[in-house]
Amino acid sequence: MNDQAISDDINLGQKVKRGRCHNLSGCEIGNETRIGAFVEVQKNAMIGEGCKISSQTFIRHGVAIGDGVLTGAGSVVTKDGPPGRNPGGPRCRIAAKTVSFP
Image 1 (cartoon, one colour):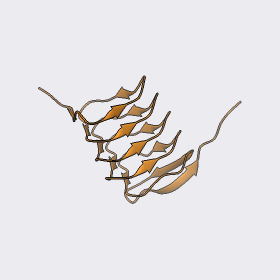
Image 2: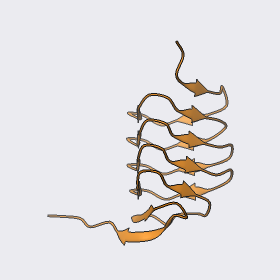
Image 3: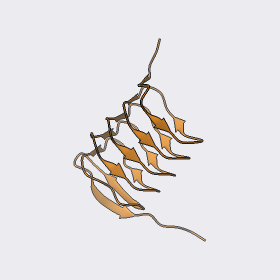
Image 4: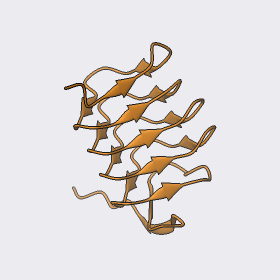
């Protein structure tokens, strides 16, 4: 059973970890990004480096997500996400700023 739909025109960075059951089409995914289960990323979307795309997230065509972004589970991302911000929820508002610990 093939539970992943990955088109030939995607650009996967190094050390990208992918969960089960996802649909990736014509997108770019940065190095060391983690993609959860049941995620769909549409054409021309760009995901930065070191991101975590949580399960059941939908990323719309042409959206750019900056480095270090964490999406909440079940997010629908329809607008660009700046680096270090964490969008979440059905309409994906910026929920928090990424915090770094020493």
